[in-house]
Image (cartoon, rainbow, N blue to C red; front, side, top):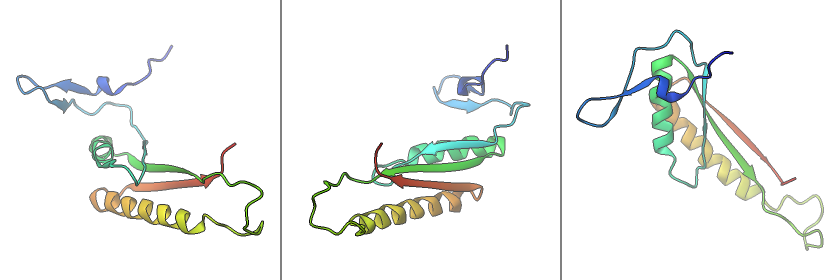
Length: 120
């Protein structure tokens, strides 16, 4: 049975200062590091940590955001083909795009995935 990889396999504690430092890069390559993000929250630390790991392994950083549109009652006053949440969705997408651009400025091998829709 093949042992699964965990982050602790690649990081050791530095003596006396209590911070982690990377070991020598392993023989196995991590191709992509997924970072779930929410542009409304502060996710900069998660992105920076992913960039640090990605630069050590030569990986791609993939920012992922899943946007769930608010629920609409069927008997609303808007016509059926009216997209009442288009402005809000565009704002969230623009914020995500800004976040992705900042990540690309720091680490060019960054990509983004933005998915949206209504609930199940």
